[in-house]
Image (cartoon, rainbow, N blue to C red):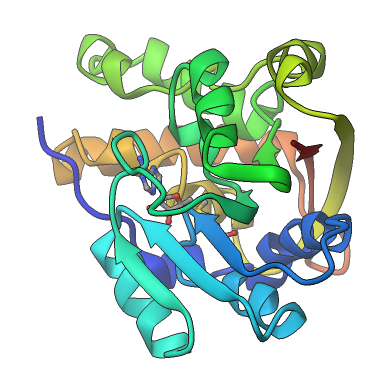
Length: 257
Ligand SMILES: C[S@@+](CC[C@H](N)C(=O)[O-])C[C@H]1O[C@@H](n2cnc3c(N)ncnc32)[C@H](O)[C@@H]1O
């Protein structure tokens, strides 16, 4: 099995669209004067810097398993501590006032044990703030599954597919509620107006398509992407002004311990 690293530059395409939910999550955290904040799956640090702007006196630690992401983040701020670590084995060195994680936990499994274990890293009265995409029933994501299923690569790609990586909101309520004093949960659909040719392909290329394309030869990858491109072009037609509307649903949770 080979897996390549994330490509931070490619991920930073559509930076504004990716940042907006991060800021919407941040805006709902009620904490006034935190001492210790972790940003789990901080990526290139684009949201972490806003944590620092809001709480300049806090110790802020950004954690990510991608060397490319951490390298980009280090160039963004030297006031934030950056750690290259895998969240499946990472342990907090002290309990946090705020554990913030934006667009990351859908890459990790076993949420029924993961979410309570994250709360172990939060102080009593502290906050676990989570945003995860919930767009897996939309054509941007179901088309990926379609191309996997209908191609010669089906068996090879199956172990790398993340077709249903998130649960229903009610399930998250049941997982978190026994461990917290309050829970604020909501969903937002962002009707993103994307620029450029085939922007839905560009969008998923740096995220959901990446682990699949890593498994294919160059020729297979080109054929996979072409099939996917044709499917999403139909589902997301270009508007007369050249933009493409890509609705994208996201789940938000603010749990106070
Ligand atoms: C979609 S990006 C989100 C980045 C950033 N939080 C943001 O809001 O833009 C997901 C990030 O999660 C990281 N990630 C995925 N699985 C991880 C793991 N097991 N441990 C640590 N980081 C992980 C990836 O390297 C990537 O930087």
